[in-house]
Length: 242
Image (cartoon, rainbow, N blue to C red; front, side):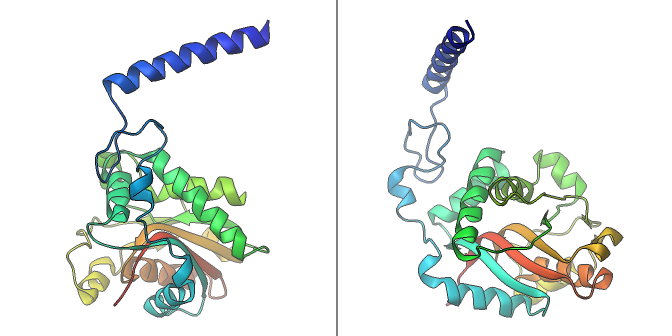
C-alpha cells in the first residue's frame, strides 16, 4: 500500500513539475537558454566556460592569504576565479538578487567536496556565514552566504552558526569602491560574540572575495575575542588579480 501511494505521489509531483516548467520554463542565468533540469542554474555550454580554480590553486590561495594578511587565517578554499560579465558573475548575481537559495546550497556542497579532496583531516568546529545588515536581509529575503554555508555544512557535517558575528551598520555596496575605500567602508561594522572565545577553529563563508576587506574586518573582530583561533576561508569566487 505504502509503495503504491509513493508511486502515485511521484506521478502527481512529476506532472505538476511538467506543467510548471511549461508555464515558467527554467532558463540559464547567463545565456537565457531553456534547460530541462529545474535544479540547474546554467546550461552545459555555460558551465564549460566557468573558470574552475583547480589549475590555479596555489596562486589564488596565496592571493587570498596575502589580501587578508592575518596569521590566524590558515587556509582558503574556493570554486572558481571570478570574472566580470562571465558565467560566474551571472551565478553570483542570481544567488544574491533572485532568491536562488538552491543555487547557494548546491554550490556550497561543491565547495565542500572540493575541500574534502584536499583536506582529509579537518578540525573546523563551525561554519560562520558573512552576515549582512538586518534591513538588507529583510529586503532580500535571505543571506546568500547562509545558503552557501548550509550546503557546505551538509557536505562537511559541520554545524553552521549564523549568530556568532553580527553586522551593526548598513554599508555601501563594495562593488564600485577602490581597495582603500572598501576597507574604510566596512571598518567597525561587525561585532563578534564572546562565545567564540571557547572555539578553536572556524570556517568563514562568503560568496565572492575581491580585496578581502570584509573578511579581514571580521577576522580582526574575532581575534579580539579569541587570539589563538584558527580560521579557514570558504568562498565561491575569487577575483583573480592580473
